[in-house]
Image (cartoon, rainbow, N blue to C red):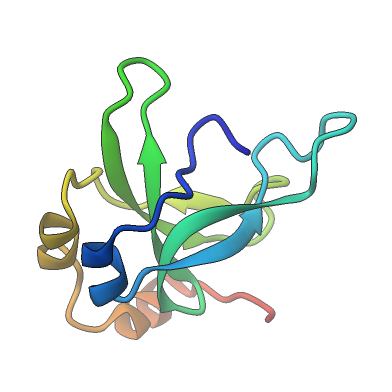
Length: 111
């Protein structure tokens, strides 16, 4: 398990469209670390997602809006907005059409 990604899926998250999903392990390049781990994720488009995280400093739970950007390293998911601290706050910050944002910035992901 990652030090930052959470795997505890709440009923509120399920109702909002989150699922327990395999994601690249941020530590997957280290010896004996798995390449993928599970995390609570809500896909927004092929290149955008919300992911449940825990602060390694104080244990605060947040939801990060991330985008997949090719050619930036082994873990190509990067933050694109400030973290939200509740499911409803995360949902209220989302763009009306994530696919429009993908097109605007040329974000693509080979699935």
